[in-house]
Image (cartoon, rainbow, N blue to C red; front, side, top):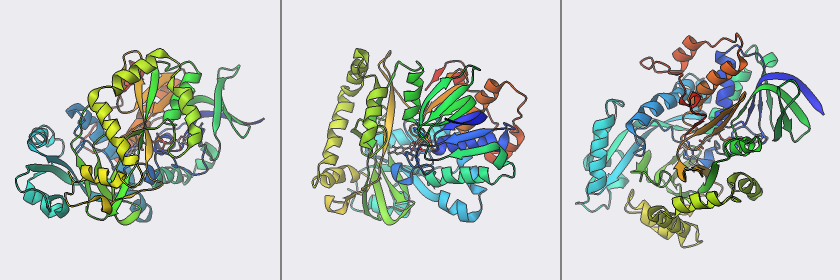
Length: 466
Ligand SMILES: Cc1cc2nc3c(=O)[nH]c(=O)nc-3n(C[C@H](O)[C@H](O)[C@H](O)COP(=O)(O)OP(=O)(O)OC[C@H]3O[C@@H](n4cnc5c(N)ncnc54)[C@H](O)[C@@H]3O)c2cc1C
């Protein structure tokens, strides 16, 4: 068995989260030896892959399911990605960050009232956010107004924002790290190396075992493997109360009918439900629509073999997991919603049912305009607390002895650098050494000068933050 010295930190997972942590540790701390291990041959090829997510930099302006508190947190957290990317050389930046118009559209009296109220609550956080009436919407997105009944009330909150190719972002985070003068002695990247297990050795260090018989020894291990993080946590006896509801999100294409991103008002009980349309950063001349939501027991999209891992992590052998699924999924609104989404999977007729939903955004589209976006879509593994039968939204973290397990559904990619900074704080604490963190530099390079970088992490008090 090959051994490769002792790393201070081993990061498992080379998506947006793992590569963001690599970058933050290498650039802003003096930690001496860092490794990143990714099971696929390519960086960012699972949920961070451009085809697999909606490519939105979520900052809280159009996400109507976020509380005002969450909006404030997400706005400064995700702006780190924009600050990072803006400083990249033009040739790289133009493949990572895409300025775009974006809006959330309210249709009907109730949604209009909701957005009017929301505007009052958040416009001080986003001074450039505009409330648009029908004429204002038509100016930016004419197809949203064309063919709409004249008396149907509509309003939109809109401003400029960003689309992000999160795979290119992850690649650039690795490239920027490896371009450092001190990288060769400090940083090692292992691609095509699936981690199979992790165990303690006699010296109290972690042994990270890889499928190719490689063993990495580490003082700290961070799992940035999204749903797989929970699988590894469970193997070590942690997070046993959690299960995952596997929601597959797929997409359709039409010809280009939108100039920017148009989201709709979210139903708070169904945070993954409101569809949107937008240009795809890698597909010219089309509008991408979705995501749909379908119960599908795998951990990685389009990979049947990961269904075994889903059953290993989900705890379906326990009665209380079934009870939690029943409490959550038999809620009439959720049940109806999942049932309706099944219609979007039936060959030939799916586009016609899907078009009915999309007409809320572009009234003139018909079923004949839609084609399924084959090879597009990802898995949203929604965490469930089987003790309380609650659906947990957003990212989750389990912190244990010199180990962190990150579970990162949306907006995990948007806040990847912020999560990495929070993890860096834990890591420095674990290492308990004189490793230095250059806060001034990080603040200057990645933060809005008006924000002070708050490193306090609520997960320090509760080991299971959600
Ligand atoms: C339909 C959909 C739409 C979304 N839209 C958005 C959006 O618009 N904006 C946004 O911010 N977020 C969005 N998200 C969420 C976003 O995609 C994720 O939050 C983000 O990609 C998570 O990044 P990650 O690095 O944690 O996970 P991933 O990108 O999945 O990376 C995890 C990595 O861990 C690796 N790994 C797993 N197991 C092992 C192992 N045993 N050994 C070694 N490596 C391993 C995997 O191969 C993978 O590369 C969306 C998600 C979906 C599904």
